[in-house]
Structures are given as structure tokens and as C-alpha cells.
Image (cartoon, rainbow, N blue to C red; front, top):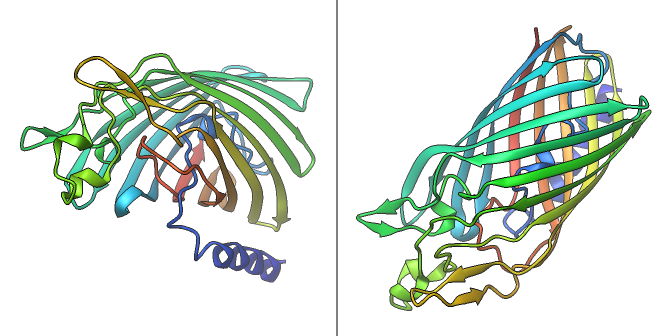
Length: 303
């Protein structure tokens, strides 16, 4: 069984070795909030009233900007059916224009389990940055911002039976951010001009679907694999200094990711995870600066 598990993991990594630099992933938050992630604590982990997780995601955005996202998450199991979760993200961005860091977002959610197989989730993403970090007094593009800078509403529905899990989610920003970057302020041959203008950036909503399977389950190891399409519902816009709203053509569209999650349960109430997501189909234009693929590690304990 362990051999099968290793083969599955190597196959997934090999399949995406040539794709990780193409645009993909594209999760603005709803895909990974509690209740929407099928690879949460497996049935074999002892479940208590409190769950604490911490970890780190690594990714890459446009123009080879490195994205690091450390996080800590706390879940309180209120009853057999209801749980409340708070997740704090921190952001670090490193690229040719600047190195930035700072608080990212606070994600608050509630999940309700019913009829044994179903879950409903609602939440809000609260920005901890206005998405207008600067260097030498000049605004930076979204790729260097530690937060999208928008307040978002998130809704989700899940169904799980045996080894299979299906989720659907919706995320809608209800504010635009305060970013002031305009590529037109820079010469054509300037590195700044390679990025998308996002002055007073207005990001459209997303819908997502996920289908996953617990492909391998050994004594202490679990391997989950799945597909995750995310559809960006409309083209985003930014605002010129004269007040005109400009459509960012090509920012609407589909991102189709393949995901894998390897879990190692080394104690009855503790879990280590390796998380990988990479695209096979992607949007042509990504002004939001989200990472184009993701590799993460996560530690969880049930108290």
C-alpha cells in the first residue's frame, strides 16, 4: 500500500513539473476555508472541541514574483453539527520591483453539517491591508500586495459519501481596494510596465466546484486527489485618474486545477499534510496577482 501511495504522489508531481509556471490555482479564499476542503482531518483522527492548524503555502505569480503565505487557523466545534473557524493569513512577496510583507486577511466562517453527508458553509474575508503598498513613494502592482484589499462574502455547499467528496462555492467582493498602480505611469521598457494597471481595482466574483477522491488509505497515510475548476464571473476593472472605469479584458474565465493532498497521521490527534495544486487550464489575464500554483505544508492538532 505504501508503494502505491508513493507512486501516486510521484505521478502527480511529474505530471505538473512543466506546468507550474503557467497561470492557474487562483483561489481567493473560498476553496480553502473550513468546510470546503475535502482533505480536512480524516475520520481516524481523534476529534475534540478545539482544532488548531498552522502552515505555509509557496507559490509564484506573474513575472516570477514569489508568494509565501504563512497561516494559523482555529476551529471551535460548537456541537455535533456546527463549527466556527477563524483563519489568519500573513503575506510575503519577493520580486524584481520589491520585497514586501505584512498581514493579509482574516477569514471567518461557520459550517453546518446535516443529514450526515451534507455541509453548508458561510463566511467573510476581511482584509488586513488596503492593497496599496509602495516603494519609494510609488504604488506597487497587485503582485506585490499581501492582500487583495477587498471584503468578500463566501458561501459553500458540500456532499461527502464514502471516499468521494463534492463541493461548490461562491465568493463575491463587496468593496474595491485602494491600490493606485498604473502601468501607464512608466516607460514601455520599464519593468513596472509589464504589470496590469489596478488603480482602485474592482475584482469580480468567483464560483468553484471541486470533486475529490480518497485514492489511497493506509494505516497512517492518506492520499487525496481531485479537480478544482474556478470560474471568474466577469472581467475586472480599474479606474483612471479622470474617474473612467476601464475593463481588463481577458480577466474573466476558467482556471482548472488538479489538486493532491498527502496526509500523515503520526499521533491519534495530530496530522501533517503536503498540499499541491497546479493548473491545466487558466485565465489569459491575472491582474489580481494571485499565485499561479501552490505547494503547502500544514500541521493540525485536535485538543
